[in-house]
Length: 53
Image (cartoon, rainbow, N blue to C red; front, side, top):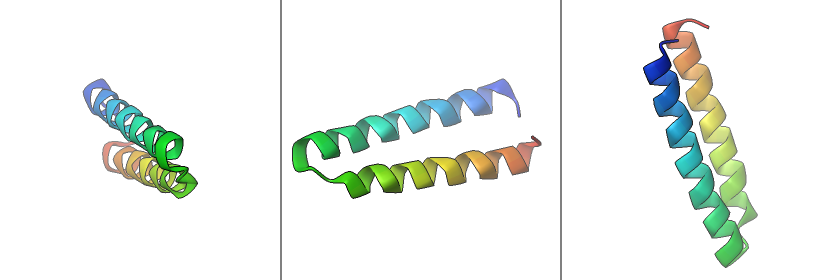
């Protein structure tokens, strides 16, 4: 996978995880973290498949 795509996916994952952490801290919403982890893994797998592993 080209480094620029990997960098974008990684940055997006960090932002999503930060948001889920905020929801967990403020509202005790642990499901947000579970949803984010699932979404990040799906995006990473899709990108890896689309751009070669």
